[in-house]
Length: 403
Image (cartoon, rainbow, N blue to C red; front, top):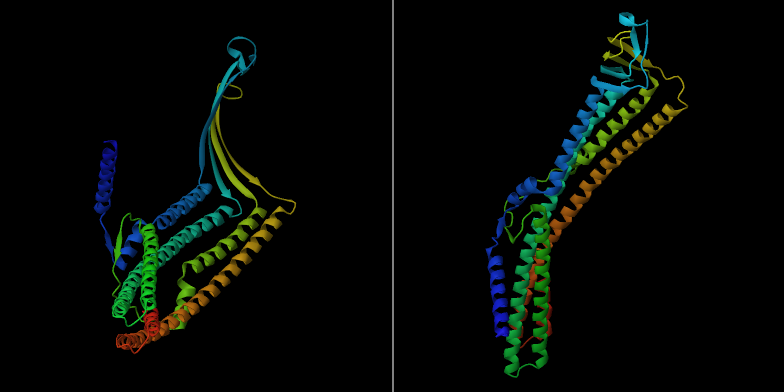
């Protein structure tokens, strides 16, 4: 009874798991749907967009450096003794009360600091531009990756179809070889060869299914989808390919990495100017209102002051800072030149790959036609006992490769 009960429990769990799996609806996507969803839900794009808010917050923080600061401070003090002068009575003035208190309201406004705050604010604004360009680069990279994974699934589906057709070829040869063997026309070796070819085709089908599942996994990660996915082959034709010069011009003027490199050069130039600002004096205005318990010399008063600090000797600190900033500027310029060089070579390499693919596709189609004709002829000859199983296997392999 315990054994029967255990089997019933396992059967129930199996049925529940099967029902759960079947309840998962399959998501059917077009390429446009996949790209649109990636822009909406992809995690890396969302993280890049958050970086814009970080850069804007940094810019707002630097704005506060040139705005006035108002603060309220106070203190309560218990002294060990109380001291007064002026005799006793109404003429007595307490200059050190035993319990003392005071509060002050102060205002501080920077007036001039070598324009360092202005340079830092300009750098922060360029940082916001870099964050936007970084988001655009993340979007471009994600869209390219999604399109690549989507087409990988399409190609995997086609590969599965090809392997199924190759299995059909192997089944056809196996059936014919089995018929010949039963009729005593061939030996058992021909049947075994056909069986080997059929198993090899089935193994390749398993590999194709594995590759499809890997592509589906990558696509699910990019699109944040949990469950089976079905894709449709894109039907929209590719746009007309511009000339190489036009593509290079577009790449060197509109790519996000080049725009970021150009902004980094501007940031480095501003950094040189900011470090030079440490040679200039700093000027601030301070004002305040003070009220205290002590009546000497008065219990409340206000004040205003212009304060300045002139650097006279800084032991080479500013020179070292400026030299380091200039080196960073040269590095940024070299990085910009390298980014433009990489962009040009990326275009040339992509065009070379495209031309090679077009030629390879044309030759593959011609090869497929020839291999199909060769296989049909070889199979007819094999069925007529005018060709061996090795000849048919060779033509079958050629057809599978061409497909």
